Length: 201
Image (cartoon, rainbow, N blue to C red; front, side):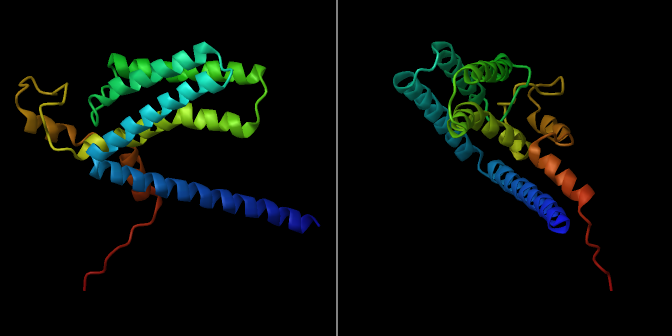
């Protein structure tokens, strides 16, 4: 009996490892698609924001959620619209970005406070968190690396050189610094997975 119990724990560890690898591979593929199709990604994120706002409207009309949760969620989506204006470029010190992050944290606080005092089934709580709180921020998080392979334009707000008209030099000087999700996965792939060495005959 103890042997099968140990096997069950080993099976759980193997299953969790496969799930983690599958999620990582999926995120890598999505990040590659986002880098390739930034205009389409912007449209998808805009649709996600509108759908989330419609869900908040449905919660206001058909459920007994507090008005503070609904209002804070709607303001958060407006902040996401402001962040989307400069997509795929993200200025982490801009007021819309800081406001969006702040409202996401505040929305989580309000949701935890409400759901700890009023009982809802776990599936409904998870649906609220997934659709209203996590969907749009996760889309922005995955698309953080989208501007790494974009051609240089004058839309970039902070050139690195003193000569602000020299877009190409600024672009190539920024390419050495890559901090997005795709860069993290590429680094993990290069450092963890074994490299194939081609034989030269």
